[in-house]
Amino acid sequence: MKKNPVFSDRQPSELFLDLIVNGGTPVNDCEHCGRTHYDSSGEFMEDGELKELERKHKLNPGKYHPQNGTIRWGYLAGKQTVLGCPCNVITVYEDLFWSHRQMICEYVKNRAEQELKDVSRALGSAIKTLDTISA
Image 1 (cartoon, rainbow, N blue to C red):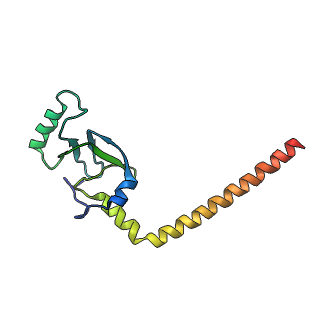
Image 2 (image 1 turned 180 degrees about the vertical axis):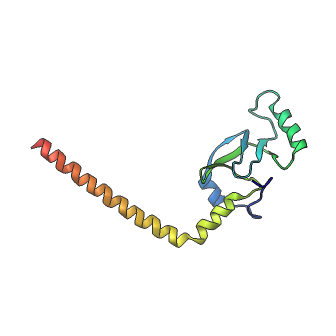
């Protein structure tokens, strides 16, 4: 992987970010780019953890990224993703989804219809079984 990659020069929308957020923590890694993000206040960290992260940041500022407040994160494409990471990988997915929105909507509609048919079939079988048992 390229050192400190940037996948887009734009930040994703808050609308898209709200769909991804899973939680918050004082320290977290973006698995898309390898950057380590940390709350520069040191709140909720172990003794000495903030000093160690600040030391690492001085040695490698591209990898260690201080932020004000809790590090918001979620999962995207099966990888831990930090919201606000300068790699902006989230923007790539948002742009992909938006540019193919008609196809995605059609897929979701067709898939939901198929799932409904499958559930209806299973329900019919269950009702027949119950009728047989109670007869």
